[in-house]
Length: 336
Image 1 (tube, rainbow, N blue to C red):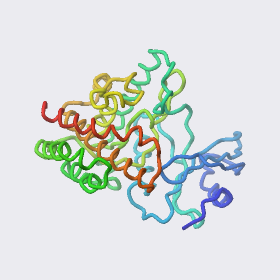
Image 2: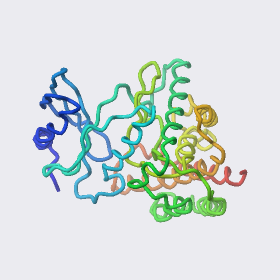
Image 3: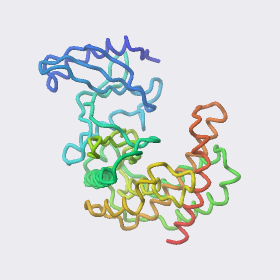
Image 4: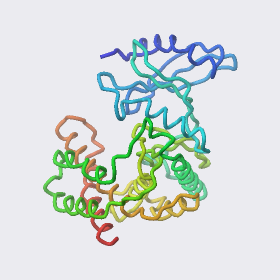
């Protein structure tokens, strides 16, 4: 396992600076610090350049993990590069590769603004600011989906089919906290999803976790970047739309709804996506799939927390949402 202390990262960055000379002429390392985050190892570093000091973002792949899925930084750089042909705000890739000291690395620009997914992050914002946030978020989502599958599937694809999107959760379900409580609705939702799986959905570049916590905004509601591309891939465009709609359909959450659901409504977001040029026809199946997935994930994460495998007290609050989300998935499928 490679050492990831700040001194080692600083030595590696000093070696990498020549790779940044095109983007930042005369760059020299000033300082490096941890950026936090859960996916991989993240750092911010400052460099002095001919144009003044600049801050950049460094992502390292988790040590001791094979280069695949969320540990494959080239997946993220592939998606970010494809966005260069769109108007979607995103971090710019400055350098990528492998270094003997730290392994696989990805260097991107740092974007202004802040994410708006945490508790309290939307409180006090004026209505017109929230309206702008919603409109720009959904315009960005439509822009992401304007990248055709053929532009990225050489590295991000191929799509394995809607059935796989359903059955891949089987092995996680049986490890969850609410196996007995969820089983009836899980089996019903699973059967309905498989029986009505779409066969002709348009494939495109998808973010994989498109939500307000992965969007950066200025204080006046302007979108500055779509971030955190670890789960990107080639999939039906409606996968992303169904996911963000699921988080803002209060019928699925009751008193456990995310705070952002008080400010943005699922149908409002769908309408804005359509207004921006996205096609939302048939999204109900994908929203139901999102509730189904979230229920399995929440049940699993609560179990991992309680067993001390991955401690995160937040799942004590969010975990019970597994029950209401799975029930809502069934309701959507039975009414559709």
